[in-house]
Length: 369
Image 1 (cartoon, rainbow, N blue to C red):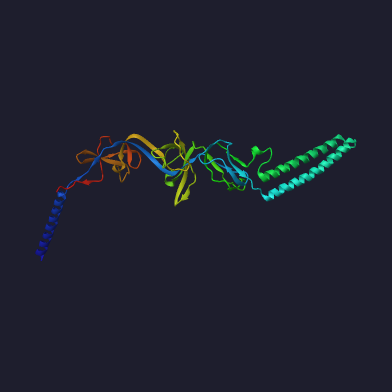
Image 2 (cartoon, rainbow, N blue to C red; image 1 turned 120 degrees about the vertical axis):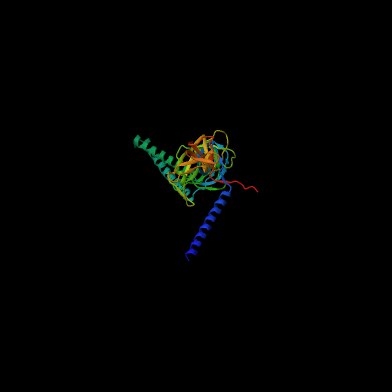
């Protein structure tokens, strides 16, 4: 019995030893792993945050009427340049029946009062001629009569204004003539002849007759995600690309970052604005969609590596690379990193321009047939 157990143990030892030897043989017969290398390069690295938005005028003025009526004539169209005071449109007043009736009644009341004061003035004049009343009484009668005449004339003018929007002696200041309040380009005229318009007052913002803006002063208005807003600050440079204008980049400066975000499609967005610096005569139409690259950091002509070549120590979390010292022999070197754009990263120290840095994705050599 003991002899059979001994034989079994010896046989097991032989099998394990043989298997080990076979495994080592197979391992040694495999082709060795060859690591490729890459040398650092000189790069200009720009760290950016991207915002989407559109190009808008810095100041857009909406021209609204101060009297209700119907558009009778339009003298401009979108794209025209106008100066402050230029005529834009003419409104035909559609009188309000209640206001027209009140104005008519005011004329009748003023006429009755005028006739009464006229009779009183004539009576006082007769008495003054006979020496019955004093000069002071006569003067008071004269003043009262003159005031009645003035009130009657004012009532008639008020009636004309309610009915037609103007009156004699005030045609130059008639509010039926809509004029530009600023100089610039007419961006749009959203009304047509025959359209009814509403006056601008405390209870209604009124109908827009035209929109005017200085197209030489444009801004970028867009939104950034909450994950990026903490990285940006005012006065950072912007690079604006407009989809409709190919191969052009416009410089701008970040002027405004909204203190409060708004939820859009489940994400919090913050509004930003930047003033464009137009160095040429390129015409940018208002409302064009654009993208803004916010320059967070920039490093010009610096030694850089691809980020994929950099590893981080599990314990210290510090970056390092492996540099080739001999054929397929590598040593670890700690590196100091700078600006990164997601592809390349600036290397401030740790490697030289001629060092060969190990590419971590090993590539096995092809087997020859």
